[in-house]
Image 1 (cartoon, rainbow, N blue to C red):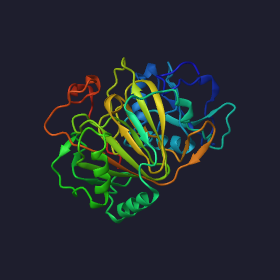
Image 2: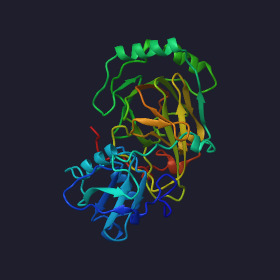
Image 3: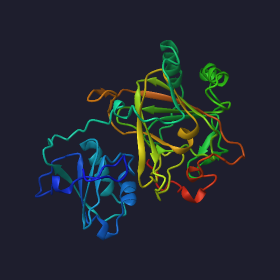
Image 4: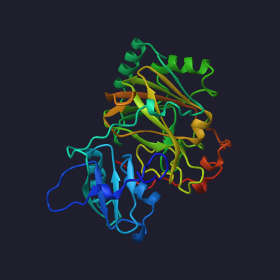
Length: 356
């Protein structure tokens, strides 16, 4: 490694790659980008935003001084997904994209072990609290059964359900659209949360998300202008690793706000620090204070997680119940104005492209 573009995106050594030659195509987790570099007018923030437009995490990057750059991903499937997007009419770039081979790495797809929870154990995220065994196995089974009896919204890559409040993804605000009321099957859970000291507000909005293996969500901050302090998420089915990222205070990039599971995120140019958090089955995740307002959170698009170093856990189906309180005609006045779309709206770009 020759440095890095922030803590979360190490810089790749271009001398370790073999340039693609001939018609033979070997799928790897690395991409070769011709006509892409600083001399072509490309910048790191712009390149990262484009590469991650398909909600695939970039694990390594080299932006060349000339016209050759490289990017690395978790596996060949992720690299192929980005390659297909860059070669599609949706992309406005004229880069020439091929798979690249890294010296001393197997060419069977080059699967890279995901970052482990143990590797970031020393990192503290103020405001993140995980309560294990928050619900019993029988409660979890019944909640999941009831969820699956309800109609799913299948208009995006992941199936979702919304209750209590509608959210305008284009304007990043609570909308007047009609959605079902808070469902009866979760009322006892809502009562338990509201009677505890875990959340500072009542609950009037629920989003149900389904994560099949390989499905994730882009890094984002739940819009300050749309929701009050405090987010609670209950995990049904399988556990999963969620990553928290603290943007570099010196970054000039825009911050990704709102629910970008269906939008192309505008990522900050660099990340100061990151933390991997394991969310076990039947657990409750609380996000408050600094974690809610000043840290991005997301789930990588992959089929495995790593809790202990070197130990891979295959993902299975996970369903999350995310509870929030909608903000009512009161702008956010949090202590993190540069991350706040109420106090600094010009620093937060609206999503630019539907993800289907």
